[in-house]
Length: 511
Image (cartoon, rainbow, N blue to C red):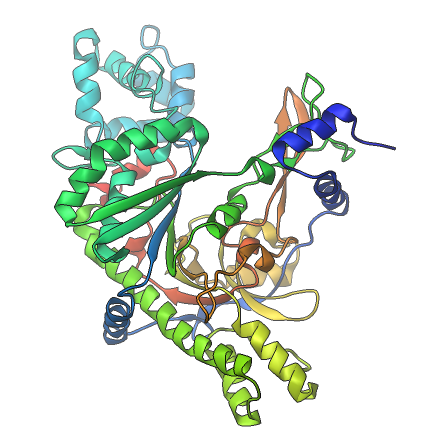
């Protein structure tokens, strides 16, 4: 039976998606996505590296020296809207009427702890004064003032922060409030500057482009003056061609009320396409909402330099070996040295049948393992945050590798797999330093290094109907599965995401 009519095919053409891609996605829904097979958690001494203060300083100095003349780039996924950050506040506006109920009665009735925390810390938010000035002449009581404060914060007639991207909200209160966009500029000036120029690339939503460019116009020259830097700032959108099909319970394309096929954004894994289009020797990746106040900038910046120093150190050796292999014959001793480097430094153990390979097969295998993008991933000690962590996994071919794995990819009903998850000691804060070029300075095609079997199927609903949605392999999960991967312990101060508005009350965001 033909699933697609002429209108459907035209819809696919406009989005830049082929019929074959959609059919492949339907097969994924039908077959399901297998759980990953954890071998063991990556821990310090086995998969996670820990450096002494002296070693860290050496790596920072190595980066400062070797990065001269290299193209550095800070790549910031920044398309997230703030609506989820204010979820509790939107619910409060719907549930509370200050003219009919006292706040104390509302707390007793709902047990709304998130909102209670917000109100108790209200004066410490960076937008407090701005809102107070806007509502002061309308407040009739303390409880009414709280309601007006939230209303002014979120709604279209007020500041409309519920619509804004996270990157443009006031996060830190100095003499004037600073947005994450501004804090990322300051960071870039500290560790991603080459020849006085700091380059940044933000992936954003099309509806926020005007807002981001307005913030750049307003703030970039100011920060440039403060940091003695010039900024080159680029933007890109998640490509429409990376949207994925939604299906109904029978795995048939889910259709909107107008009969068109429902496509949904493919998740942050779609950004591998954006990353593939940037041109830089060293790329620093960090999420838009993970920023620190100025007083902690040096600690965070030095941590980044340390990771980048390790990248350049490992690249130097990798490039040397790759060039040797390309030049022609290498001795058995040299190949042994290369395989030891791959196993001990790049966490790429030899294939189980490597010993049986001919010299030519060993040569080809070593070249294949060395000619890959490299990523150095900062890992923080697990403090109970939800999300991914570092693990050794075994693929269907029996090859063992280091990966960042999300809990949704793990079979929690399997006692052995769940035990490995419980033994994990570190957490992924999305702190990556990437080398995207080979020993000849040529860019890798990053799409060649994606494990398409590491996506996610999630349950959603639309127009009151249940549907299944497909997320592409995550940017730092399956989208980078076939990179050479090194995990390094970094200080907890480097991880300060703002998932809810109350996270701004944490000490790390109080200037």
